[in-house]
Structure formats: structure tokens, C-alpha cells
Length: 88
Image 1 (cartoon, one colour):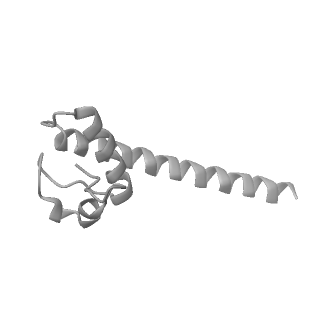
Image 2 (cartoon, rainbow, N blue to C red; image 1 turned 90 degrees about the horizontal axis):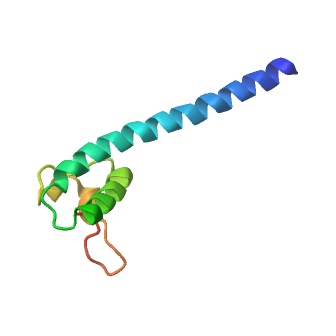
């Protein structure tokens, strides 16, 4: 019984740590890509926030500071509640 409990606890800990590592890696990827994408934005904080949201969901950010959205269809196709593009 003790071995089963220990094994189950170890498995849960492993699963939780792997999801945290994946989130951290995605976050650093998104932070660097969005920093480039929003480098020339007038409202940089807003650009970084929405770019980060889109990157986390789509796992990609188009190259450059503007345009090139065909490189990432998920990023391109996200719309806000008003039907306008969500991602910068």
C-alpha cells in the first residue's frame, strides 16, 4: 500500500513539474518573439499583452514588426469580440 501511494504521488509530481516546464519554455519563447513584434508599437504594453495571449494559444508569432501574418494562420485568424483582429 505504501509503495502504491508513493508511486502515485511521484507520478502526480512528475506531471505537474512537466507542465510547469512547458509553460515556462513557452513563456520565454513568447516573450522574446513578442518583444520583437511589438518593438515599434505605439502602445507597447497593450501590444505585448495581446501578442502574449495569441502566442500562448497559437504557439507562434509572425516575424517582423508588422504584417507576415500568413506565417501563422492561428495568430492571423484570432478575432476580438468586435470581429476585428485580436493579435498585433
